[in-house]
Structure formats: C-alpha cells, structure tokens
Length: 225
Image (cartoon, rainbow, N blue to C red; front, top):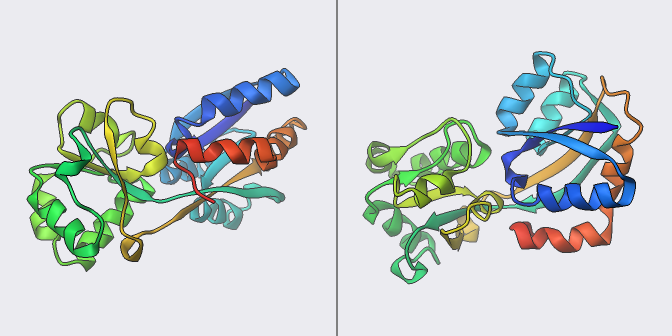
C-alpha cells in the first residue's frame, strides 16, 4: 500500500523523518508531491487524486468549501512563521526590530520571495503596508514557488524571505531569524483526508502526527508550539 500525499513545501525538510517513522511503525510507503498551498488547492479543484493533503489553514478551508475533504479527518498539527535567510554571517544584518528590519531590506542589493507561496504573498502585502514596495520590487526575484533558500545559496539574491521551515530545508545558508513579532504572520498547517481517498491507512498517518514523538521533533525543522 502506498499513500499519496500532496504537501506544502514548508515540510520539505521534515517530511523524510515523518515518512521514515511512519514506514517503520506500519510498513507503509508514501508518495509525496510538494508545492505551494495555492498550487495544491488548484490541483485538487481540477481533480487531482490524493489520499492526504498538508496545507495552510486557508488552503484547508478552501478545499472544505469545495467539499473535497473529509471534515472529520482533519487535524491542525504545526505552526511556523516567516523568516529571512542570508549566505553570510548573521552579524551583518539586524532584523531585531521593525526599524532595523526595514533598514536591512532597504540596504540589501537583491531579495527573493515567492510569487504564489503563502510567505511570498504575505511579504508582498507587508512591504506595501510599510511603504517600501517601490524600493524592494525592482531588486526582487520572484519564482512562482519552491525553496527561496536555493536562490540565496546560488548567489542569485542576497536575502531570501520564506517560512522558517522552508529556509531550514536548504543547507549552507544562514537563518537570520523570524520577522519581528509586530510584523509576523504565523502559518498553521493541517493534514486532512481527501474525499476521493479510499485508503484506511490515511488515518494512521494523521494519528502519527498527533503523537508526542512527532510533536517533539517538529521544532528541529522550524516549527513552533
């Protein structure tokens, strides 16, 4: 038996350990496809077949609205926030306050954030609210999705904005930290069973995510309680 999971890229780093633990306990393998929550919702609305989805809460709510999920088999199990990645020493940058955060953004030469990912869309709104979008947009690189940390690692941008769990998925770069609390937007992730799934094993994966074992390991991948 193989479970098919459509999963947010926020779990790119954590998923191998989750799958390994699941396989060890139940001898069940999983086929995982990653993408932004927005792209996964679109795929599901267009008829994509899967047993489980792991998405941001708005993504889950959208699929519930379209009656694509089994509501009684949905569980919110993880939370993370937006952070900043750099290739160089973190002492070169200060993001400890709103004022220093804005200065860091304005002083950097290039910056990357996704066009359709939850963190990228949030950042686009944030710089508009802060009144600095005209200075940031011309020096920004905006892929549709994926791991922005790869752009930082390859030298394509000086700074990368993404969920901390996604930043930690890319080795060789530095996590400067979470955005200041007054600017932060926390993302809650849920796992849910698709209505078109006929797999009874899906419930086992959901139950695994509830266990103290898994909950204790998620902070290693940028998730917070």
